[in-house]
Length: 430
Image 1 (cartoon, rainbow, N blue to C red):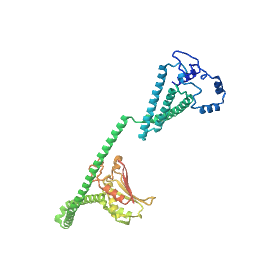
Image 2: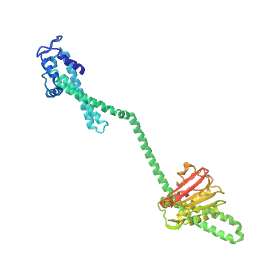
Image 3: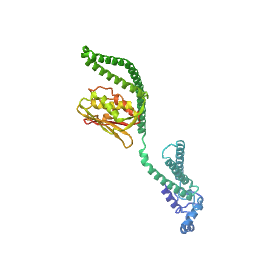
Image 4: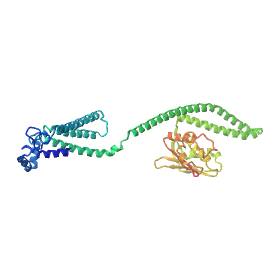
């Protein structure tokens, strides 16, 4: 359309009408002196670029150099008004679109790519203005102003194209409505699952609290009758030792006493668990020789040694500040496990080493059945037992849990290195 306008502008110099009147339809008149003034043409052609620019902006609203478009060419009423009304309708639409875009941008400042919205508003307004001027030139031949508006339109168009090109990758990455709905559905499902997990967690915590309460009550209730049974068995042992008539019952009494000792240990473990869960596991720190404590623990485990050889290595002069009874409990637990889960003729090593960070590391190493890699991370959990490796061995799975909590209460670490068939190395620091 603008190329055609340029052609019409050139034709204006070659056509003419009767002065002050529109030409009659079908007539082809030569332009009057206003359209082809030779003097003015020569002046504009020979002037310097600076003078041409100065003259352009000085006469930006001047219409003296051209006739109105009605008076240049052979416009019929139908052709002229068709041209005018078409330009006006385009201008009206081009004016309405930016107004609507502005209302959107004004109310939704959170929209992405706001810069593009503003560029489109400016671009469409300028395009509409060019059509408005094209319609007005039929009466008001402001060709200089029209050229300036078209230049501004071209510059804004180029900037808009460049800005749009830069954000094309971002626009392509925008999620579709279906994708957003799918994401919302996934979030709703995730929230429902989270709420479900929260309910399960709360129910589990309540169940564990009730179980801890039950264990505490049951342990205290069992403690008194078991103490009485143990005292009675000890009395029978003494009587059988003195009376030859009761000698035959002594092995059975000893066996019963041993089982009562095991039951007592279980009750002590349950009591320790309830204290740990209630945060009431107290520590009585004293300074003592660690090697001497390890030797005492080995002597206590002597009946369970069978043919094993327990070797103690390391510094025997190390003194530590800790709860002696609780550390004894940890060492006995680790040593008992090593004896239980390794062959009878195997060797067990207890090492005491001073670390570079002023800590002491105690480790109990065996060459027994070992622990699978996927089970190690749970080995210190409450009531956890590696059933696949030891289905025939008894236990509640509390010993390692209690040991780990005792070491943690001391502010230190406990761990294990193990592999199936290659044994285990349990260690802790003080």
